[in-house]
Image (cartoon, rainbow, N blue to C red; front, side):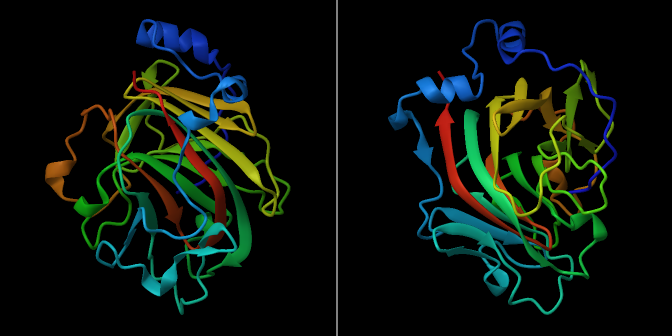
Length: 276
């Protein structure tokens, strides 16, 4: 989604403190420490490195399940967003959804951009992608709906102009979140992360507790926290109006990888269920 100017950097409260405040004792993740102590069998692999049998494609202008021009594919064990079969982008914003919804969880993934970018895509899509979560069911997305009603863990890389371009930001197509205790009117909220080169592998962690606390980590560091994701806001278009009931808390939903005209590859996509 869109890349917006970086706001004044706010102090990030410790995950454990916010969790105790919001969840009255529910166990929270603290990122790398938790990973080191977590039994391996608790993690579920979402991408098997072989095929996309567990995933559902939805691309703007196309029906659910139509993987136009083989946009999403597996190559050499990596999950690719690739546009070598496109003549023009024509606003074919796409999303690849894992087949099942999740509620409270710790998602981990690694990503790296490629040199491929379709020049007729909007300028903001350059070195820009994302991981959508708490999304509507892909089977409810209409053919001419552009983005799913969801929250986005936005992925950016440096654009070679020397300007800071943090990754791990939050964008909100058809949703709202609370930031620093208030509902934030911005479509995107920038994180405190560094700017990374486009061709460098970056690790993302997303820790979600239903409709309360959401934490973004980049390369093991907490870079953004917010609360109370809910349906609301704008940006998503041509959706079924019955599904957009503003103010409805987002307690669960689907996870999806984005295609916006910029090539990107993913690996090591796994999840740990935090529901008790």
